[in-house]
Image (cartoon, rainbow, N blue to C red):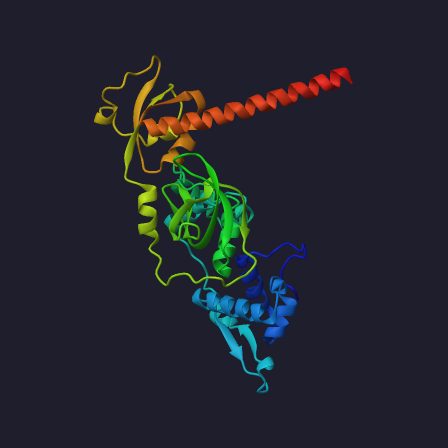
Length: 350
């Protein structure tokens, strides 16, 4: 009755929790710890009985905190006979009857979670809503809206697992100020979305201080430490305080935009007579707009995506970041062109 895949790959904490829920919901009576370890995919990775015990107890606490009614079934008096199951009557949901406004929020959330991590699950959920006649109403409510949080990326899953299992992590990180890539050793505490991006808050082991890292600037894989339970997360982690300086105060970007281009930037721009645009000469054939922003890297990524259609006039650090991205993209194109030319020449002489 193993509830999971057989690929042999490491099981993420959220997958293991789901496997446990499926197993305890479908058990005919109750499952002992020994049965859980033998039958539920994800627990077979425990290196020892003690490691399994800690993992199982932590997962039970997590599910109960989420409102999953796991009940204990006493056996014949021996500890190994104690079983666990989910009270299906208490766990069952009443019929879901969403209002049009609530359906609109769900549809918007589906757009937000359209990255590869959750794309399949969200697609199935929206298909079921559409089959129930909710699709049109939800679509009308969110027309013209777009979520401002980007996909979490490949670092999200390993970091979430590290937080669940209290494992330190190592990753290469590109600094926003210098662009230098260095190795970081971190005890991750929380993951949060702010200002259009995802961040992990934790204890930087090399700097012996609380640090914040943007997931999009993690270069390559996040490597988990071999030993779980190596640190404790503080009872109170003030994520807002930690991210406050990182997201930053609101500033204004002055941009020269080609006609009928960069619609999303235009929609967020302030009125044309805004004083932040004063004193900037408008290049020929361009519209001058002022766009408020808080996250430098997020806006730089967006502006660079428009290529020559958007020119940054101010501030200087935004212009520098956009130019750096465009130069990196141009260098990559040149390398690809040289590789293609070399391959064609080899074929011609072959």
